[in-house]
Length: 115
Image (cartoon, helix red, strand yellow):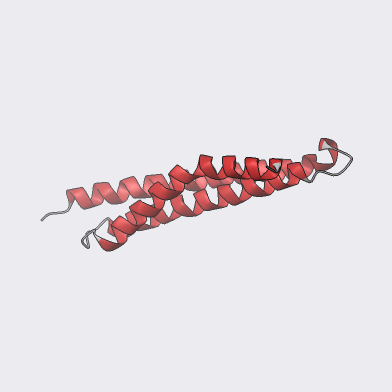
């Protein structure tokens, strides 16, 4: 089996639980949650979680592809690109944190709403 395919499957396998959980949460909120004061916040938060998970997956796949197709110069020639990818991954983690806060805030508002 080609080494890049093995690393690609590893990267996808690492991100898959988060992607599935975010997709299921978004579907549940979209289809089953009754209109409540915090529903919109929860939808936005879950959307941010899902979006950042997808972007982290794409960044990881791009980094793995670059590692396997590295030019002769080695790591030194790719150091700037890897630094940018790492910074983007940290930014996606920050977006994911904001999404989690929005989800929790929306859930708290919905639970406090009078019935």
